[in-house]
Length: 494
Image (cartoon, rainbow, N blue to C red; front, side, top):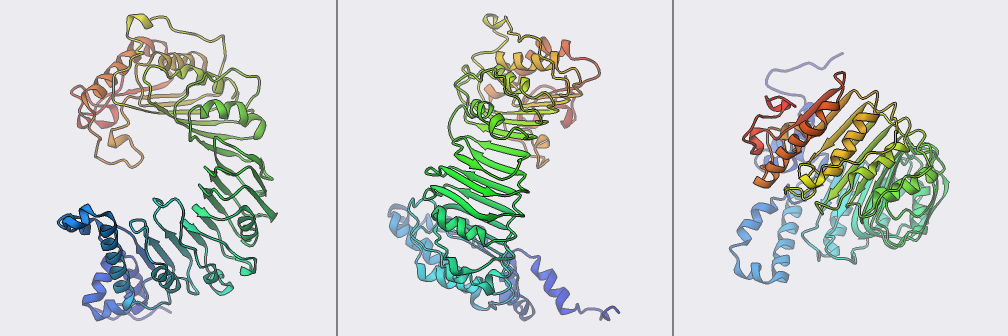
């Protein structure tokens, strides 16, 4: 039977729910001026303390007027720390320590924050019923001095905690912490923890679904002695000393790694691999290593900081790969050979979707196909890509090797349904956020985008079959282009 509704008066639990949807800064401000809001503030479920909620940007503006703070770094840090302490203590003053579901504490502007303050705040947040904890110290200090109090992760608290995120601190869990039956996510970055400590701790997290480890340089060997039955996503990158990973995660489907892949045993045939490069030639590394390491992979994403060595044609194949997404930083405008990506395509007989996202300076290409010296276009021996249906290249330019790659795809992808060549990812209406704001392109960037479209007209458009949905997208007028707008911005495509 429903609760009787009294006009002009909401039931308390509904009032509390509506109040819980307010941003933290608005909720705390309302609690200061209304007794009714104060009652709800005492049960506010999500406490987030960071630069935004504490108004640090506004405080920085006032701090600029303090000459000593702007010239003396140590004095300035002390002022900021005092500001954080006062703001957080004031917010928690009238707040009950029960009912907290999420406690987010970001202290990165305060590299020397006293441990006594942090201990007190974490003790407040880590109470029975807590579901999410995120703690971040400043990554500017290479050696994290704060030792996270693992004793707070007792069986009582750990019984409700689902997500733990630690950045830039020391974390040395003891084997006596017990089993954490509700944990689903663990994120460690710039955390000092040994491989033995991490392996034992993870083995006590029966329900762990996501495990993310980055820049944890004390880990040499990471072994988990039990089966991780629920682990689905495993991310491990830039752990400089890591040499061995041995886990048994039969349901693992997403694996994110670096281009310094250690000796790995995952206990699963991973379907989606992301390789994030911290140095050049990650695409070549992925092409040569992944087929033998994970031959059943279906989706591959590779991020590379430019390719300085040719990716060779090899006999090894990706027999199940149907989705390939490459993100490539091209900082040397005349040295990147996009044509070498044909090696990846040739090794993927069932590939259906190929996406190439290029990041490059807004500058004119020195290797433009429109230059007379670049008229001869290379071709590969016949190499049919029978299943390739969708191709998209963003930040498309007039680079000769990029034209060669595109021509190769058009001539050999007999089932191609959709081809999109986007010369300006700056257009807000074409981003994933679908905003109306565009990044204004400088003059050289606009000229290169126009050259890219001209190269498409000369070298690509004539060989695309009518059945292919073909779009060559220009910058829109709001990006700074003086010509026709792109097809998604009221204009038309090539």
